[in-house]
Length: 82
Image (cartoon, rainbow, N blue to C red; front, side, top):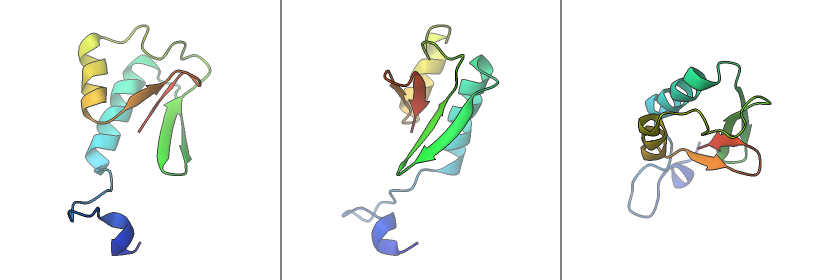
């Protein structure tokens, strides 16, 4: 991976920290243990057939933590992405 792709114009890494990725997936798995992961382009989607809607049973503090970690809900596909 070239350094041009990894850093923004201020020299800060554009890569996602692995611990934030794992923490987000762990939160999602608390509610949907059979969730599936699908990487596409520069996003990672986590969801599955039984997640409808993806925030319906989630505790507010878990949703806030996911959002702080940079995760968001994709309403069209009923899943989380980062």
